Image 1 (cartoon, rainbow, N blue to C red):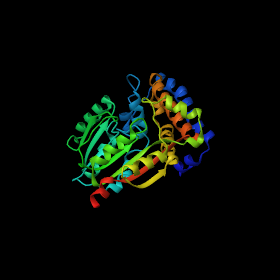
Image 2: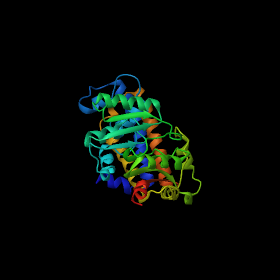
Image 3: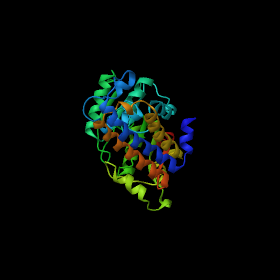
Image 4: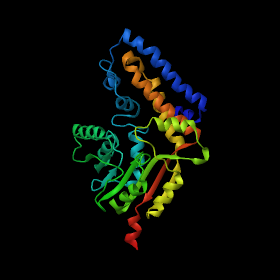
Amino acid sequence: MADGAITKRPARRRASLFERLRNRLRRSAPAASAAPKRASGASAAALHVVGPPPDPLTVRQWLYGPGYMTPGGAEYVLELVKQFNLSPAMTMLDMAAGLGGPAQTIAEAFKTYVAGFERDPELARRASDAAVAHGLARHVQVSTYDPETFELRAGFYDHALAREATFHVTQKERFLRVLNQAMKPSGQLIVTDFVRDRAAGERPELAAWEAMQRYKPQLWTAAQYTDCLKSLGFDLRIASDVTAEYRRMTLLAWKNFLDGGELKQLRSSQAAPVIDEVERSLRTVAALESGALKYYYFVALSGRRRAAVS
């Protein structure tokens, strides 16, 4: 399978994938500008070949799907929350709602109510507008919040999802404690996030990745997450290194973009934002491959479950 080949591809060849993207963008974009072709189908709807350059959020949605900003589209999110056993009677938290794609996917699939929280006011606004546009305003509500100081209604939420919601948070213990208190005794918490492996030492690849982040990363090790969750009373069930899967999803998204016809539809004036996103992904993959940066998957049962039993 193509994605399996990507996972096994050595670092040098994976880097060449991004170099091919750069070259294709720089070479074909001017040609597309000189002789634009009329697009049709889904690609035409997704790529606006006439007008100003796309913003970074548009590029990321081309890669990962409408409403998605990070690797892992709708199928991945549905697989991630499968163990929640969601129903129309439930309300769950999405602590990094972004443009609202995951929350909409979950609400459409399970008729579950999703309370989304997003640090960036503009993203929160766009996510709310998208929910209204898709007829999901009743089931999906996205609010702006400060992850360092937020509070939630105690014991109200059935489950919580935190995808890349904590790596830039300084007060991680407080963040996780608020979630624990907000969930019902039967609640489950899923965290997927970047962690640091100190055994790899100080790596320039990690520094380069940190430099491109909008908010300064405050990386914990996997052991720190594990210790914190347990100290807060969570029943930690899974703490798994899923770096290879995250890297695979990143590379596959770009491979599909490279293999598709979208690049030929880009005008020269529109290529720069895509090249910038190539650089972002290249730095992320390089940091992951250096061993200093890893991606982890945690599953924990609410600490209030044990308190209720005792």
